[in-house]
Image (cartoon, rainbow, N blue to C red; front, top):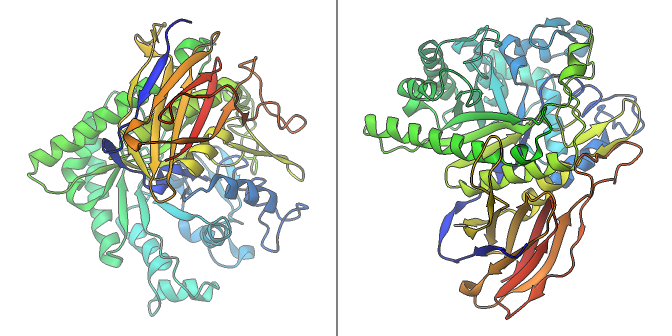
Length: 502
């Protein structure tokens, strides 16, 4: 290809600081995310509390700063009291969201212990489907109040003297969805979310709250839902949520690789809606975004239809990810970074086994899926300040999009470490792309490394038997032209991380 992509990076042209919570994840009581995932007493790697240490090490490699829990659709039928206290006395329940049996042998306190071991924090969701403000404020009291009340002393009696100090709370989950237990209209949800927010903050004024936004851009109420909900809750919440999944059931790779453009539009529209309500209310407060469910999800749909109901922890939503899925995940991470000024939290859904970067066998092995790598690279190297991506690229048209840049890119400057990282995806399915990076505003720069992930077969995946079928490697052929301008060859259909000392 004769044309090339270019990225000019200006040190003083800044999008905003990356909140580390942009690289969060999600554990729901769904499938084998908990049982057989993070928790499996009797597994050869299990510690004294039943946590799989092989999984813990893989999670630590991702440097996950926050994990949303316990759902998801699960939370809208969840009685939190079932999940605490002596395990032998906990109630088994029919779990209607995913049509399984929930044994409640793993619950709130076990999750907080796991978070400490995984070097992460909790984003806790409250049930606003079958329950309401009273149960929400009681959960905050149990979790966060030091002592001296029935519920805080009950936590101490359960073996947790110190409060959990959970800072971030979701006011329900996908309440616009007809699939949701206790789904609501925007007005119904806005009212109950407001009342829950008030009493939760009266119990603990230090917490921050996430209101439910639209479950996807496909919802008939989007984006009017956001406007109505924020009309009720604006001065009582800090964030509104976004959820989006992408699939490739038609095997149209060109359209699939362009899906992050829909994510870009979603983010822009929700920001505009938030700012409209801000103007309407003459408020000085800015609502930020929590993109607390995002991923590729479509491989497991047919298998899930064949599962018998009312099992304990059956294999649900176990997508086996291929190379092009990892490229889409890379593009989605770039989309989040490009609006780091307003997208302050995000959760890849989910963390283990359920549409996840980490897979396990019950009683056996754990391994990294293809999507593990772009997620890890962004989390580890994408800390600092996002710079405005002054980028140009050849473009293409496909069935679902027009003017799709072949190269999707963004740069993050970590001033404290003296490093700049450029993330780039080459969407071209058959040709490499020359990629020129202009760093003259930094004076001089030195390439530390070029990490790339490529594969001749975009449908290749990692398995327990071939855990490294698709994995990153060191790149070659990067040209240092004048200490401030670099040209790299981005292989066809590739994820690239270029790290510079500046």
